[in-house]
Amino acid sequence: MEDARATDGTRVAVLGLGNVLMGDDGLGPTVVRRLLAGCEFGAGVSVLDIGTPGLDLTPYILGLDALIIVDTVRADAPPGSVRLYRKNDLLATPPQPRLSPHDPGLKEALLLLELDGNAPVEVLLVGVVPERSEMGTELSRPVGEAVARAEAEVLRELERLGVPAAPRVPPGDPDLWWASAPGSV
Image 1 (cartoon, rainbow, N blue to C red):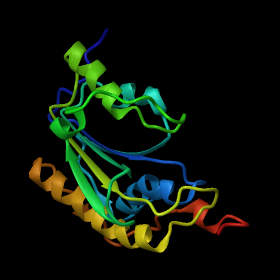
Image 2 (cartoon, rainbow, N blue to C red):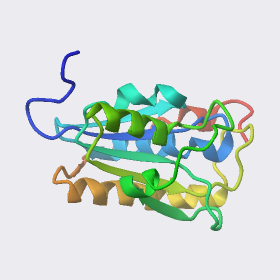
Image 3 (cartoon, rainbow, N blue to C red):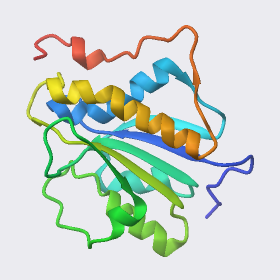
């Protein structure tokens, strides 16, 4: 298999996970689209809304130097709380049974790539505790208010990794097409 690493420097991916039709689960795509509208990223950085890949997450992170994931997380904290998890935090416990096809499979993908020697060295999960994950296209108020904090954490991590984003002048429209869908709540 061909080596997936770029030859021109650091490869970093910012991936937004989630289903935009399931309320707060749309956090990851919302943050990513806002980042793309407001920032410009260097050649070694990709920023993608990848929806709900489940166990198909592996090809997106194969051979990266660094990975930043934005998604909702289960945590004992109030809705809208931002939680940061590093690679060691994510791999500290064994994988749990997947409860739904949406469960991202992040831990499983990282473990598989660790065995293969192609896992990212740096991993940060920027997680936000959801209030609701039910049919609907709007984020709850607490999660909507956490979007800017999640964006700031992504930008802070890119700076720490040495691949800072630059403000887009003028900023674009984040194209949150689902938020204006007929019948959205």
